Image (cartoon, rainbow, N blue to C red; front, side):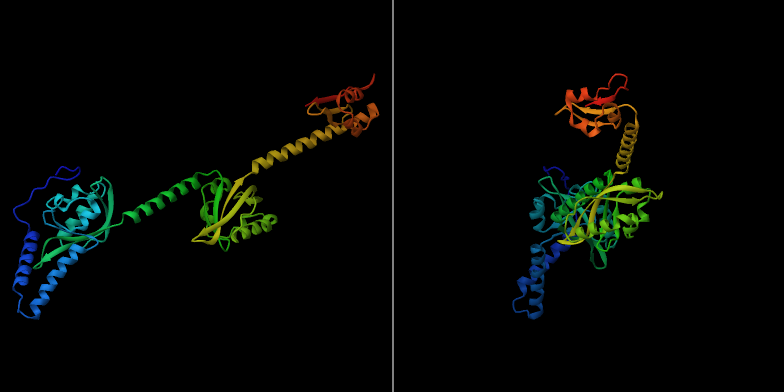
Length: 368
């Protein structure tokens, strides 16, 4: 056979199934030819033979038979419409040549089991179409028994390509989502409609020190600082009602007992058009808040030092309009001007007024 992936076929001297099919067709033919005037029993048998043949030929699934040597004996027309191959290209050949390499071992094992009289469970396999694309089929071979003896394999297979594509697309989408969630630097969580924690990504463990197992299936409220629970609950209820509430800051309990600052955003978790819970993102802003607090405390210390210094300490801005942004209280004792008046005298003239008189301490300042 010239097509790629199709094995050369060689026909053994005898095929038991082919003999059976030939004998059956011959018997049916004799019945059809000799039924005239033979009575209702013969007519019923003739009709049964025709019905069986019509069922196989008009089936919407691929129907096939195989010999005990593992060669394809018959294929119905659906094989051609599904795969694009003609039946003549495969009858007499081996099925392993049309199977995907990864599926070949399990299918050939199933066929060997069938020839021993077993009945394998329904399974899926990919077969090569004439276009070169692999199609997913679902089916299960069965032993063909004549006179109490297994003489071959009989089976059907149904295409599940579109379903499998949809399932594969869904699986890939879920994998991408899972990868995104697990690699995020923020905590990503879902809550049920009664406030139970449904899922947490690995960053929850990194940030809080808790394991996910310690909180999955439990209410979220104990994780929140008591003073922050009212806004947290309000935010959750708004998301549960279908809103997209603004971000809020909360304190979250870590395993060490310390409360961490977190910025949180919640959204409705929608399934089949219904809100079934909430999904949210929490970002650890503890270090940012610590840095801001340290800066504020540093500025407070600077302000106290400046306010109590015996020298004039000032901060001057040159642009966009020259002005004093800060002048320490010592300016009053030295110049007679109050700090507020010094603020209003910005520019060169203000600098001159802030200049200490002879014998008075000098001023210290910075310009911006």
